[in-house]
Length: 332
Image (cartoon, rainbow, N blue to C red):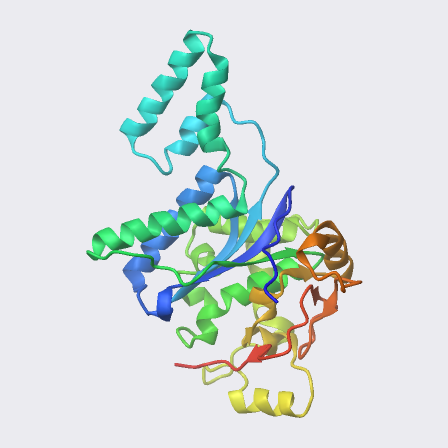
């Protein structure tokens, strides 16, 4: 049964994932950089915050914070618009808005503003704008037509203590799972690699993870703590610079009915993070399930389903996935 996408009416965090059509390997380093810059521009326009992200050759991940919508002044609107529109278009919008204000036609002015502010602080509008604009940009550069993306995007509502850190680490370890790098700090197209490279907006995103846990720290402390999270429980890379376990080791643990350590599990592809619908502590999932009861079968009596095959620290999802929950890492 396909479960409808869950969207909160207030502030929330979401893990977003989308793939290129037919899973084609179209995003070379230049394209990844174009996508990264556009993602940052859309976030600045929308008022949403990219906590962290991972851009691969045929798909991308983003952990997005969607805040409570706030009134936007005319001046602030122009600043936001400048992230996505050229100067002439922004100037034209500003002049039209001022014209309505000067004539006392405030309803018309607010209607003009709403064409843009209604797209802010909204999960669907963030993804729609990002994917559409990147498709248009890519197609122009490559003399191409048609859709670039495979089906609809996936999103999972994330919440509960510790869940954000776990999902962020999973996203930042994408390039390690794909065998592109041995250390996520060496991959500049993920939030951690961007932050290590000096990007303040990327550092602010990772700092947000610890602020959400009511832990105030400067970047040097956040960098230390988050790196520990990436290599959970001290599972550092081995001396030969390869991940500290083999696919055969993982398969043996799963075949024996055992569970993986969190560090091992995070270096595998885990479907809970893309198909779980809601992910977090048991109380968070149950409460979100109750708020969005209409999206689930009438036979359901509870929301939380414990995550299997790993030491997840009590994390649950809203879907009990049965097939291919853990997929083995691939080292290129």
